[in-house]
Length: 126
Image (spheres, rainbow, N blue to C red):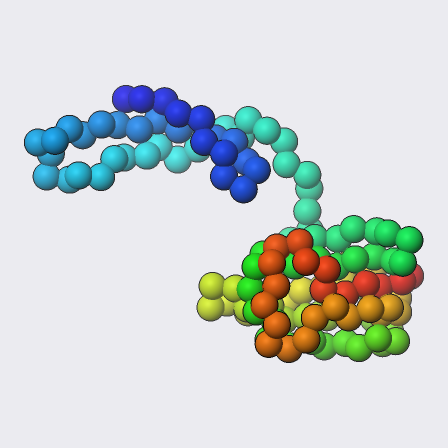
């Protein structure tokens, strides 16, 4: 069994890989699931990434995908935990919510747009 350290999306894992040899009917290697994260990861909301700046709270895409619907427009009043964008990723619809109430100061995406993880979707001023 060989041990490796692998980093995936910023998380580092220790994994063990078993060499099954050339004579095995199963030519794939067995990988032990990570049991310990070696690096600390910042806490995030369930499905959004949020960052405050001088213009308000930025609600960012938590993963790459396509925008199915934009539920707000500039000037809209929103309450905390209101759905503002519907993001499709891997054939699943994800409701992106704002963590704070306030006024929408910018909408940076349109229906049908493709976004990457970390792209700013909307900004809300409290």
